[in-house]
Length: 179
Image: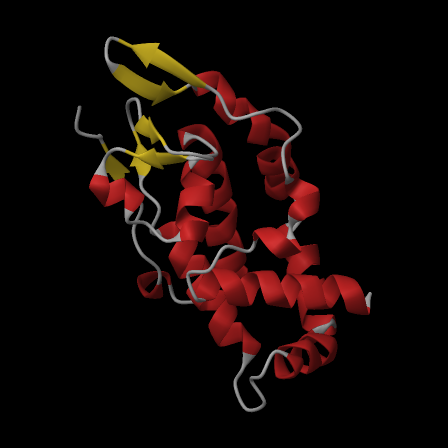
C-alpha cells in the first residue's frame, strides 16, 4: 500500500504544481500511438486518437465516490507521511489535492479540431492559448473532449464529497480553437 500511496501523492503534487505526473502514472500510458490527420495544409489531432484514453476515463468515472473518499480518509496518516517525504513537513496534502483538482478543471472542453505542428520527437498545439496550458492540463486535453468532460465531472463529485465549496473550483468552459 505504501508504494501506491507514494505514487498517488507524488502524482497529485505534480499536477497541483503544473508538472507532468507521467513518471508516476506510466501504467496508464495508452497502448496505441498518437495519430494525426491532414486537412488541407493543417495537421490535426485525429479524433480516433482520443479513444486511446476511453478505458482510463471509464475506469476513473466508475470509481465509487463515497468509497474512494472513505479510503482516502482512512489512508490520511500514510498520505501525510508520503507528503512529508516529498518535502512538505508542515503542509496539508488536501490543499495540494484541491489545487490539483483546480488545475484539471481549468482545462477547456474543446469543440472543434485541434491543429498541431510536428516537432522533432513530438507535436505542439498550434493554438497558442492551448499550447500554453500546463503539462498536466495538456495531458487531459489530449484525452479528447468527451473524456475531459467525464473526468472533470468525476473530479467535481470528489470535490463535493470532500467538502470543497463549489465556488472554490473553476466553472466548466468550452473553447473553439482558431483555425
